[in-house]
Structure formats: structure tokens, C-alpha cells
Amino acid sequence: MNVTPSPPSSGLHTVRMFVLLSLLLLGSSNAHAALDPRARLQAALSTGQPNIVLILADDLGYGDLGSYGQARIRTPNLDALAREGTRFTQFYAGSTVCAPSRAVLMTGRHTGHNRVRGNEQNPLLPEDLTLAKLLAKGGYQTAMLGKWGLGLLGTTGDPARQGFQEWRGYLDQVHAHDYYPAQLYRNGEVWPLEQNAEGRKGLYVQDLMIQMTTNYIRTAQFRPFFLYLPWTLPHANNERGAATGNGMEIPSDAPYSKEAWPAPERNKAAMITRLDTDVGKVLAALKAYKLETNTIVIFTSDNGPHSEGGVKAAFHKSSGPLRGIKRDLYEGGIRVPFIVRWPGKVPAGRVSDEVGTFWDLLPTLAECARLPQPSGIDGLSLYREWVGLAQTNRHDHLYWEFHEGGSKQAARKGEWKGLRTEVGKPLELYNLKSDPGETNNLAAHYPEWVVAFEKILRSARNDEAHWPLTPKKEKP
Image (tube, rainbow, N blue to C red):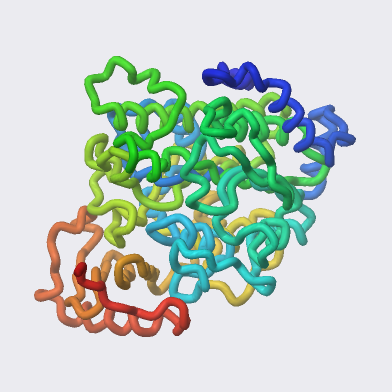
């Protein structure tokens, strides 16, 4: 694979110097590190701590990758990653939309106990333990390049106050809809992108993200690093979509230009393939700098696929065999692709049916990094499952709640799933082993399970003044 950045989008060649200067700025704090890959590898191995690269796609569905059954959209690099590592078939996001899902990932606390349970601006607090804080305290260099969504500049949720020593990107999820923004943020400062000022489209932000990412890997310090890559592909620009009918922003719809699909669907496919190409560049950089054998690479998505920006999730079968999409608590809204590669540790070519969640990532990565297990969280370490041993601890149940347009709740216990789509409505009950598509509501046949799930839905959450369980409001 080639680590050279892909050809620039239209107009990008006129700002190449700006991009290069930006990359130098990113590496300036660690440019003194020796670039001899053998020395860097030896230093990392001596700590016994692996590097961690966590790639988080935005609104990528369970069925959007070839390794998960996608037949039309090309994802060769992610399919190779699945062959080189372990692919999980029953892994769950923290929520069905962006901010709460990312909050769960960072804090290890599910939405029944998290203060971020929706897309409103509720920043993380100083007392919150985050994955970045834990790893930074444990000796890691921490960096984030992409979309944050857990606190604006100067708030307690500012990435710098939540454990990231370096960060670049979007702070607000609505700002992140724009792939050609006039500004980003960089280590606590506004970062103007002059080539995109006054509506110009000179710089596609994902091109900047991948160049900064490979530069970061190239200039990694002697201590292990945690590189969090919450990229925005393939999220829609909802504002542009409302105005034009096509909010799937990308410089070119290649390699799907000749497909007889609606333009937004060609663009969506191109966005996913572009995401796959950039994952390939990350893997190539790790290999080029002799870091791949001591680096955990994780790929997942923050929630299910959207039907926004002019696309329909059903067009490319983005939910795969699952029911529901983004904003649903059916499986299609919360079950996501999850792939882990760690050469020599995580078995290659393995498919795992073990149930896992975003709130398990914090304790699992703590164990991978040889750090003490955190307390006061909902997650459990999946380290044994990751490395191919028998998992000895499991959740009694999993829980989600969501409050957009009224409150929804869902829980999973073993092979059973109970959910309520609206306050006051009867509970729905499904057996996910026999019916993963949630087509057959068994509530009338198993009243004992209905009673059990009613108890879970009451007890699995704490009262949070900002997130009461409210009925859906009727439209006037």
C-alpha cells in the first residue's frame, strides 16, 4: 500500500504549502523524536504497552463493509483488516447518535449513567474519567484528529481538559456536517482555513485529516501513543442536503461515477470507499515505520446508518440484515462493525460472536496497556476475548436510552432484547438468536421476560434532571 496522500481535490494544489505548514505544526511538539523506526519500536516494546489507533467512522452501518456483507461498495482495506484481525458480529455502539455514543466510548459509562445522553451541548466534567485521561496518566502520548462533540472551546469538555495532549478538528457535531469549513480548531485555538472562506471549496477536510494522521505516525515519540481518529465520513451535510437534495459532500463520486444510482447514493458509496482508502494509508504508515506489530488498530462506527442528505439507508442495504437505522434502538441503530487487529495477540481471520459494547473499550484498553482497571464504570474488560481466550466475565444486561423526539429505552439480556419505542407504549420483545432482524415481537408469548425487562428499564438508569423519560410530543 502507498502512504503517499491521494491526489488533491479540486483547488487543493493551490494550498499545498498551507497544508504542509499545518502538518509541521502538528509534529512540532515531537519533531525532536528520533525517526529511526527500529529505535522507536525497541523503546515501545520495552514499556510492554502497545500503541493504540482507534478509528471511528460516522454513521457507517453494520452492512456497509464488504466483510459484513456489503456487495456494492468497495472496502478492500477494511476487509483486509478483518482478515488480519478479529471481526465482531455482536458489538454495540454507546448510542444511536453521535455525542452520547462518543461520551460512552470515552467514559465507559452507558447512557443510563452518562450525563451526555443526547446531541445537546452538555460537556464532560472535570471529574469524568476518560480513555484519554487514563492512557495519558499511564504514560501514553494522546492525540485526536477529527470530530469531538463532547465540549466546546474553554468548557470543561475541551479535549485538552479531557486527556488529549494534541488535537485538531471539529468541536461541535453540527459544525462537523461541513466538509469544507472555513475554520477548524487546533489545540485550543481557532484554526482558519482561508481556502474555504466565503463559500469556497479549496480543502476537503478529510484530506487534511489523513495527511495529519500519517504525519503524526511518522513523528511518534519514544513512548507509546493513543491516536483517536473520529473522522466524519460518511455523515451527511444536513444543511446542504436540505438546500440541494444532496448533502453527501465529496470532491468526486469515483469509482461509482458510471453507476445508475441517484447522485447522493453514488456520493455516499464514494465517501465509504474514501474512508477505506484512508484506513489503508494508516495501516501502510504503521508498516512503513515498523510500528504495526506493536499497535492495536480498532475500527468501528458511532451508530447505525442515516437516511439523510438525500440518501436512504436501504438503498445500499446499509443496516445489513438488521432492522432500523440511526436514531432507532432496534439493532440497525446500535449494532456496528467492530474490527480489532493486534499482530501476535489478536487472532487473525477470526469472527467473534461475543457481545461487546463501547463502554467495554475503556477497561479493555486499560488491560491491553497494562494499567489498573478503572472503577465506577459500566464496562467490562474484553481482553481475554480479544486475544482468543475464553471470556470469563459478561454483562448481566446491556442498556440504552435515547431522548430525541421523546424517550426510548432498550436492553439486551443474553439472547433476548426488550425495547420501548415511546413512553407509555407496550414493551416489545425479540429473541436475537433466532430473529436478529427483530421481525417477530414475542411479548405476548413470554410475559415473564416482559416483566424482567420492565425491571431492567427501571433500574438500569439514574435520574438525570436534564434527561427525564418523556413521551413523544404530538405535532400541532
